Image (cartoon, rainbow, N blue to C red; front, side):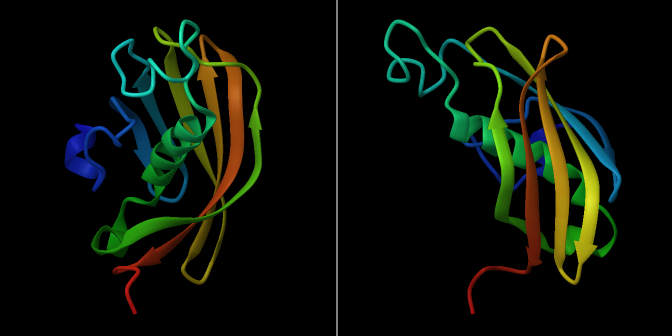
Length: 140
């Protein structure tokens, strides 16, 4: 599956290169290749680029949210509403391939909580619990 066919996000804010697996309200898995020519490389940090933690979190939120794709939720958009227990464990640098997994935790009304884990070469680099809400839009 092509991520550009699934996500509303567009370049340069689409952080998913490959969708590996997605099972509605169960599990999701995807990949992000960190490249030398990305917009943040020259500034974060000059001479020693490190993938920004907030962009890693966004990558995790995008891939974790894949498990929400299915059923009537295809007509709605999932918006990130809360992040719990976000931990940056190891730095991520250009040339790294990030694999993110999302695991369904809980659903209450229109809210869904997902546990995400990010890995580089089988080493965990980050984790977070992310809550999404389903909305037709955020206006009104």
